[in-house]
Image (cartoon, rainbow, N blue to C red; front, side):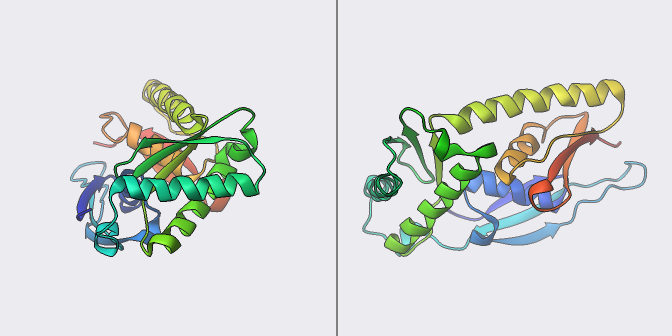
Length: 218
């Protein structure tokens, strides 16, 4: 995974896009701010932010002897063990064995693994990453889903973001969405990143952090 460059309205949005694209959290890659985003004067002369992102750890360098399918098997074994400890019946399916890996836990009545707004799922994904990193001695980007929850939620948020963008354009005023976890905010940012009429920004802190959709200046 080589360094990449991300362009967005603000540095913060660029970092959130990098997290989504790489499947990494903020502390797993280095950020070089090439250019700060500027709003200009009354929208004139505005410039988007540009960052250069470099993953902090490279799996291939740390474990050159492991093939991607072998790595996927390690993740499946870890998840199977966690499910057993939680006394939950589920089958781990590898959706993609290319890095970043994508996996889905299939089964009945798995809502307990998802939790409110996907918080339990986010915790399960993080714990899985920590255990796998310990076993491989390298951080492994992976995306974990449960019964297709993230896929359905992503599609729902994309539709909502596009609808609200049209409302912002029609009403000529900003709309603030409900508080959402980081990965859901990234979906909104990415969905509207190339919209010519609106832009997005995150406000507030912690669990109350939310996305504002507002008219693009200029």
